[in-house]
Length: 114
Image (cartoon, rainbow, N blue to C red; front, side):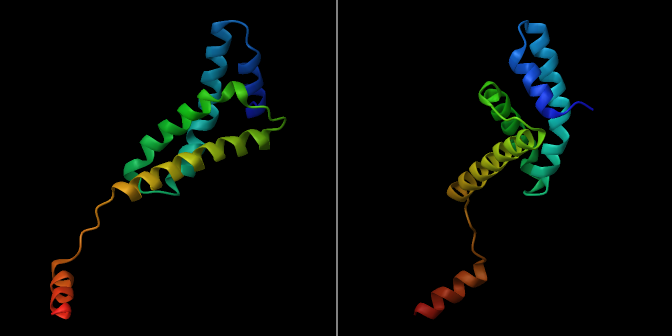
């Protein structure tokens, strides 16, 4: 298996569209499953696909600006993007979440105030 850093450098230095597409496919094959596992271990199952997609989109959007020199730096960069997408997800969920109160607890609170 080719090191991730080599695939990224191949993508960044490709001069032809076909070469860039092949390199992008190889990067996708290398990172998709490990990043999915990383994300799935940190959130509920229902949102994993969305966060994976956002992570891959973020990764490919910033691929030209990556300047790492080792495979470990490349993986750290991928995981950083995933962590940021997870944080964005949880931050947005916190803003939009409706916490429902159990009716019995609500009734007890009302009676306690009277």
